[in-house]
Length: 386
Ligand code: BEZ
Image (cartoon, rainbow, N blue to C red; front, side, top):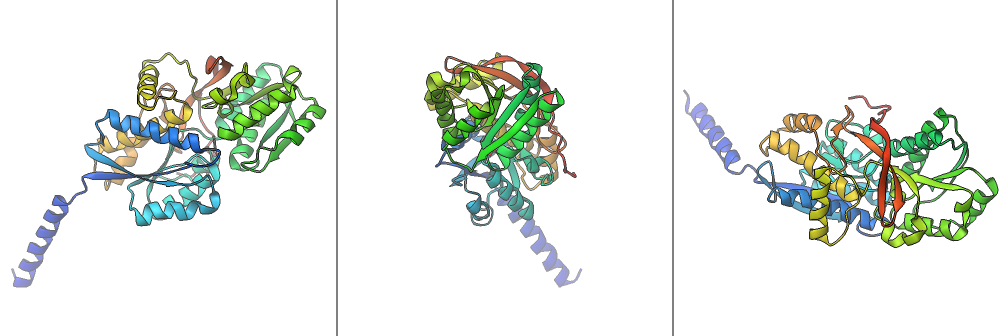
């Protein structure tokens, strides 16, 4: 062997030794969530849920300590690409976890795709994320906007409601939730007679409520969440429309909001992949621990955060914490059977939960499970080519 080859061999061996010695012993998770604005409480609940699972595992997933950095995305799509790029390029995160708002999440998905960064979406239902934007490195622990809308449409038709007006914020989540509702409702014989909306995160509902009163539908289907949902339910009750028109919605209308809505929410029917009185052992333990740790009652957002951590954990355990083994990580996440507080779920080919949707009724301060509206509902993943 020539001295040149000997030197090269020694250098290669030293480098790989150094690589082993310096193999990362921490996994960096970047939270991109709203900590201000109408969705602030939702962002906090997601972070709480995620950290609860990590804490239950002793602060490690797959043997690696989990480290956190976070950015407030303000539910502002115009700042979303910059914020996501900060996490990827400045903070060098191993995985991004976010967010709540569909428009912000779509920008995150583009950044994740461009940089091949692992992304777990713990709320935003943008259909495109598990549709045309689907990718091996993008997962969702929550729902697609189509899912709860479709479930409520089916329930409304089954209840022999004939006509409905829809009312929502004008952005992807509102539009897609309404689309899902319309699909389920009209397939069952109902008719959506008018689609009303207002810009996100507006709460000037008065003129729209006047229009609803004039249209006299059997029901109004709405998509609102967080602070906006609190205001809407109070305005609806104050307008007294509930005597003749049934208010129904995707479950975000009454999830995490009941304390603030008080009696105004009484009796409201919604569909969602979670309810406050499920009887499975996982949910009982989850709720007890959450209340103890955070001095708050958990909601669907906390569950989705918890399950985002479970999903990442399933991947990291399989590859023994080696995030560089992306194929192994993705395969294990795809095959994961998540023992969720909502009930067990698996992922579709497009990486969206296949899950039961509950019909809930607001009773006292809880969203009470009345029935399973649709069992094992799979998002159609239109446009996803994986
Ligand atoms: C969304 O923008 O996708 C969304 C926001 C809040 C609750 C549910 C969905």
